Image (cartoon, rainbow, N blue to C red; front, side, top):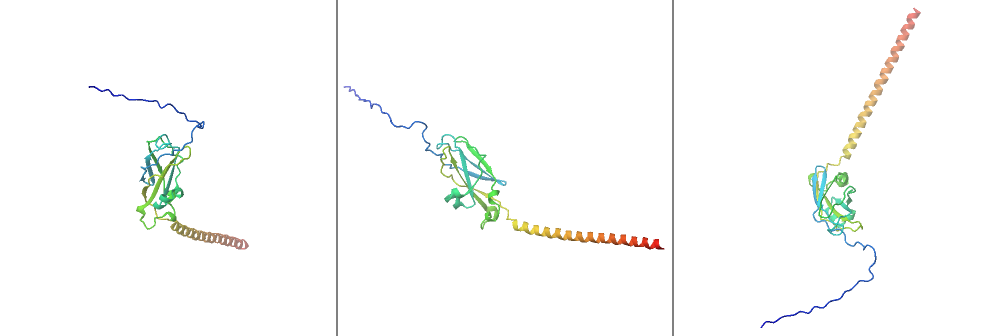
Length: 207
């Protein structure tokens, strides 16, 4: 005996939403976090690479990047906003998913006695870098993973330069004094010779 099943379908009707404000809706989605930031030292510069996020998470195109560096890992982890800001005015974000590459010189941030390695050899001196993306509504992504690069920082040479300048100044002063003395002797000698010739000429005339 064959039995036939049946189903009952009922319409849910329709609904409408009232009171929706006109115009564009506010942007509430920031760019997604960059998770693959990588840093490589090339001669005296550092090259960064990462995958571009979007305007909204991983969709679209971010408006700008904020890159900061520090010589202390803890500082950039806990206080990214007060780390040293890198100039990214020439860095234009690409579409989401594109590989970004940016090169900068850290010597402007690491020169001077306050930025010398603390208890480390010059070859093992490191800087730490992090980045975040900003969209057109100024919404910021979370701070990226932290990349690091090892740099060679020459010893701070200001005291040596100051000593060399003092030595050079002393040598120049001594040479100047000797020159003045020699010039005085020559002038005196010329005056005496002229006077002697005048006296001899005068005596010859009297005779």
